[in-house]
Amino acid sequence: MTKRIFAGALVLVAALTMWCEPAKAQGVPTASQRLELSVFGAGTGTYTGLYDGRNAGITAGIDLTFPRYHHFDPSIELRGNIPISKGDVDGQKSALIGPKVSRAFGRFHPYIDGFYGRGQFEYLNGGIIVDLPDGSGFLYKQTTTNVYAGGGGLDYKVSRHFDLKADAQYERWKTPVYPGGVVYSTPLSVGVVYHLDFNQYHRHHRR
Image (cartoon, rainbow, N blue to C red; front, top):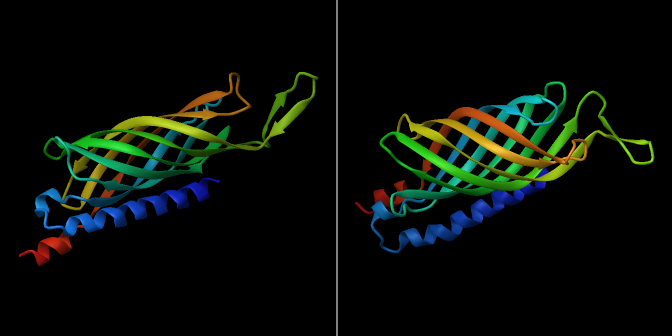
């Protein structure tokens, strides 16, 4: 399920890119044509929220940033998280998409974001048994759920194409194996951003 959502979101980002591209060739000054694509990769430590579960993994994503508006840079981001080390309780993986807004202060680019997508629990050590009202038990080894998330971070510009990234999110997951049926996951990530410049071709041909 998460693979299908990730693929669908990639198609959405590509469609947005192609839709916005023609507007850049309408004679608008290059300085106002800032449509940018960037990708990032990060190491992530996650407190899963389920019985003191912890994961260590990789988060990767792609951002499509639209023209600046009143000093703010709006974008849409697609990101996925995969656990490499799942610990002793559970492994969480997800594919999320949502809006992001950043603002530049010199080399510093703080941002806030919000996401929606799908996530998957893998319950370790043979699964988790949930007691049923009739006295029997049901064994869960894996479940999928909608995921809602919000957070923010900071990108620090090292060069024209590269940033350093620090990112924190707060995610809401549903699971039948936990009292109340909801857990809150906290992924913390540190990584690198690479910026691709869509406007380079236009700058070259407008000289």
